[in-house]
Length: 139
Image (cartoon, rainbow, N blue to C red; front, top):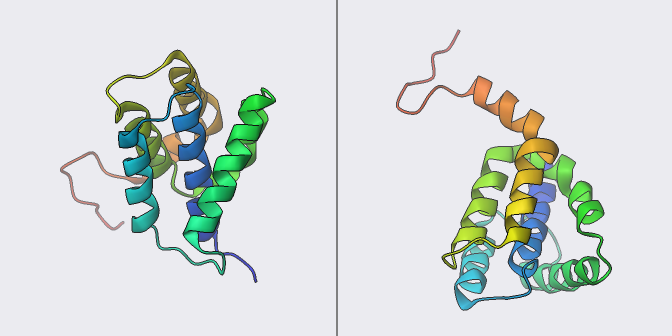
């Protein structure tokens, strides 16, 4: 089965969120609740159920962290996350802040996302969207 770009994005978003809540070595109930709500709201279009995908993502992120391979792990997600870079950044900001504080590791990943992995997509998306409060004008 060929997955849609939206489904690739959904999967990358879950993987990103899982990495971000595990990177500081402390998993809080608020982070888990946020991730559960995120998974529930996705337009899931895969034959693999979301819970099974989430479990695999938890294992994969933990393995990447144990091996010190966070950067290659995140780079693999780059093209899928560019599908909706604004949403990816929104989720990254939310999951790193939902427990009330951002660790150094979380802050480093946020910086990597905004300045390297998603930078081009964020800039191009901001150019195609009107400033907040202004309607989009067809040209």
